[in-house]
Length: 358
Ligand code: V47
Image (cartoon, rainbow, N blue to C red):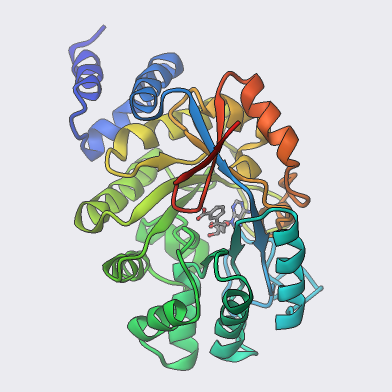
């Protein structure tokens, strides 16, 4: 075993912070060593617990003014079936989901230039008025940025409006890959990396929490993934406002991003494990079953991940690109899968308070 490799393993075991180069070198460790290291950290923090929530994903419009090559959901590209829900339609969905036990509405829209800021904010306000205890996780930083560009508001104004109208936390979408060169190729014109981070910083400074994603497995390199993690780690040092990091595995159907080599299961598991090791200050690493596939997400519990997201009921963004998630997950099935994989299912709320031990 070479000295560098031994030192690296020792550094992880000592829980010392890793640099960009060390993060890249983690990929050269074999999968089992990496998994063991990530699992040790996960076990120390959470033992055998695996978190999930009962939630509903709502994607109220697919009409989008921006163009992201990886997106199969946006109606401005290949999808001819544009839709925009009315507030009544959104409230109808919320009502049904609440009856089914959902405690969180995860609301993410495309960047719709037709209906104004009030279409976004009014939906949140009406949901909150009817269901004050329901957690609204809504508005990616990309949506916040879009509303400022389109309607001349500042970030502060949009974030304050979100709070006034009942948004409780922000999802982690729109981060993609922070490297400016890759980002320019993937989604030119959309929120920049610095702006994405600035918006989350401002949100955290308001005492609010959020998540962070990374879209990987397309044209980015391993070094770009480590750079992405380090930029998040730096912001988290300042604010402490991120709850979870979610590496989203790129789904390949129906979009304009031409990719030759897709990541193997091994590469995906390594990326989860490395996320756990690199992000020493973000409490939860989420294997979002929608993009990982359920099977791999269950295995990811042994590679540093402590959260599988939720039942979601319906999902439109990744399923448009090929993920098997359009109908969500049955609660009993979800619990049984987690149990049968050797973990203890813990239903959590959106901010990771434990609600029920199954
Ligand atoms: O930002 C778009 C991604 C994200 C594809 O915060 C794709 O708890 C894979 O952010 N393949 C939106 N991914 C979803 C999101 C999210 C999901 C679950 C939980 C949370 C959370 C946040 O979906 C976008 C984009 O990166 N996306 N197209 C695709 N082809």
